[in-house]
Amino acid sequence: MSFQVTVRPSGHTFQVDADESILAAALRQGIGMPYGCKNGACGSCKGAVAEGDFVQGEHAERALSRQEAAEGKALFCCATARSDMIIECREVQGAGDIPVRKMPVRVASLTQLTSDVMVIRLQLPATERMQFLAGQYVEFLLRDGKRRSYSIASAPHEEGPIELHIRHMPGGTFTDFVFGAREGQPAMKERDILRFEGPLGSFFLREDSDKPIILLASGTGFAPIKAIVEHAAYQKIERPMTLYWGGRRPADLYMRELCEQWAATLPNFKFVPVISDGLPEDAWTGRTGFVHLAVMADHPDLSGHEVYACGAPVMVDSARRDFHAQCGLPETAFHADAFTSEADLHVASTQPA
Image 1 (cartoon, rainbow, N blue to C red):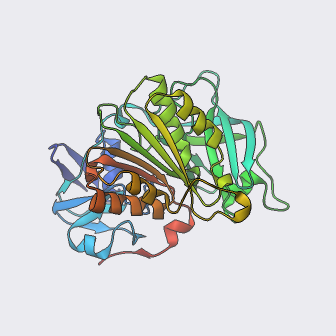
Image 2: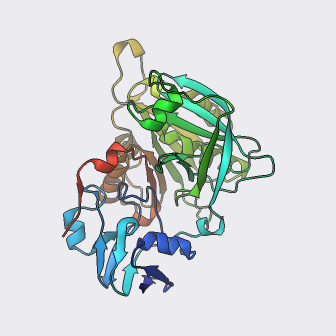
């Protein structure tokens, strides 16, 4: 059995099978609905249901609160239709033009920048070249059927290996493998063959706008921001861009020198590093506190800006809420990718009645 879903305000329609999510059906048929994690953890695919019956699957409370569910909101990545539906959500142009593919890749190099950050470069088969938009991600296909998502840190125009930045999550199956953290277990090494699927996600630079850009990152959320900055520089995009990169301690800003180089050489680019938990031995003299509050202090009026935020869910959620409520940022001008871990998928999960 299948049902018809109509999307407002575009008027686009698509068919959804009873056993597939609304988001999966939309993407399968070329409808560019926004999304991030695809598993109910980040909230990027949230929209309103104007008409029709559906079942909302298990998800994180912060991605869809009980109040929002009562108001008719839904997470389309884990909602299944039970009748024809009319939904309301903004559509994303561009991502649907690039095919999503599964392919093998070879580990070209492993470079450990800090105690918990590894830069991996992956070589595609000689006859392949991967198309993607700056900011998108790939999913590794693990042998146990699970997937792990990582943003692409290299820009689409670059030749050679694809770059990823991976933070070690102790106890995590994949990152323990990357860092060789499990005694008696194999560790990732150069020339290993992996499989991934991509490109995925609706977090990428919107090039049809002329608004100034605020780039907001925490930790390895810098990876897709790096791709966006390097793509913008290559395309000679002259919109003002300011990068706010937050970490607990200075070492967490593992490519700070590159950002300072951008600030010195790229016109209309500024870099603001922010540290939240520095120690006296760090001798840090720059900005301190929560990184999204630094943005608000510098830009109390964001009504004419676009924001691209990537990193820890708590940072992304706080920025989304506060920028809209206190700084006048339109909801449609906030683009985000929350880095959800396996643990995030099980914290405060709920299934509204």
